[in-house]
Length: 540
Ligand code: NOJ
Image (cartoon, rainbow, N blue to C red; front, side):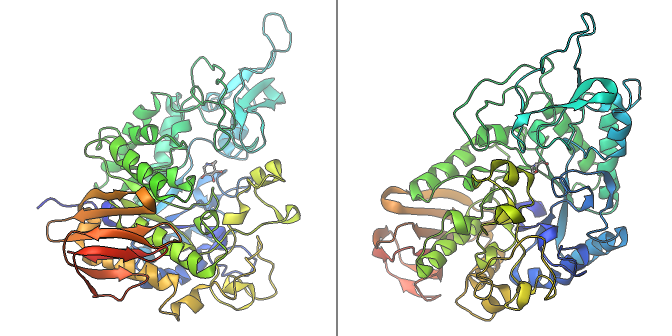
């Protein structure tokens, strides 16, 4: 029998460590906090964790600016805490991947401190530089091109007086981009990868993979009408350069040289799924998974969802494996994006998303708090942390709102930290109603819905690995599909509208799970009326 790699059948759960659980009572989540909640994740039915960065960092981009790849920031704990975390995760039969942020470092990283000190420094070429002054005429030069620093909305070429040069930083001015064309830099990064694989990490979520290599001629990007996430540029010269695929192949080779069970999940920061899929190479030679980001941007429409799903499946290479995600730390939570005022409808809509995520063919990625329907917080300007939030204010494009503390209970500070402590970001004022403890005690809650779906996924191989085919592609607001496995056949019916809808059942079926029907209920072949926002899973 063909063995199926664990990451194809696992359900991942993303933890943003600053916001998950604070054990040190400084208002910031930490590694011991995560350890204390592992049993919670087991009881929910999660299989694997992706933990956003907790490495040493000045926190200009809250950990996505690393000043030491092989140490953890004291805010989060110690290296002993991390090794214990890995051990405790494995002890429970779970897997864990860490964030690998190797497109840029922090400007406080010793590599950059050395590199910027002199053009003759051996590490100078580890970063990307351009002279500010024309060496022949002695006159100031214009900036090399129009590339943009996304989080500050400035030109991405930043001053370095010591060498009279600019360095490149397309996020903040504190995140200099490394030069992947330099073999020593490459080897240093590969050592970082080995360091964590040696500590038994099960793989990596790789930050902005498609940024690694830049156009050799540094050409300016042409104009685009797309605002988010492209900011009015077609990024044909600063992203997605063909040589990036060589790096992906090398990192895949390195990872596979371990025991073949480690996984690489790439953040390909684009909306075009064809480009994202290309980073999975032929399905076996580049990244195991390239994130499909499209679901983070689309509107509530069965037709649009169906098109997005179809496009993704079509884009992947023959032996490539899909993945789906609806929320992460960079985009507004889907409970807000797809939110409605009517509370019953809100719950039903979240049930539809959960059922979709956990029954499509592909690896699901959940975001902490999605299991209880956590919503974005409107963080006032005075309490903002995110650099992009401050730049774009008053436009609501900052990311603090989706990174607020996990709502554990109705205790003060939502059980995230001790009462009296000020959490690093404000907690949603709905926490007395929307919290894990309360929902665990309520069998009709969203938490229990997720838990049931996760359990159903574990006992139905057709949902994990079965073939996928559409029954209804969103026409008349109904999205329906079939998953056919070796042993079973399951169908999923989702009514995206607030009106009743009719569908036809070709044969008699039995309910596996439904938000408006009892489990085990038998439904005869023929006409079936779906309630507004009904989510229904049936077995044939
Ligand atoms: C993508 C990450 O998801 C985001 O949070 C971060 O700010 C940028 N990359 C820069 O590392």
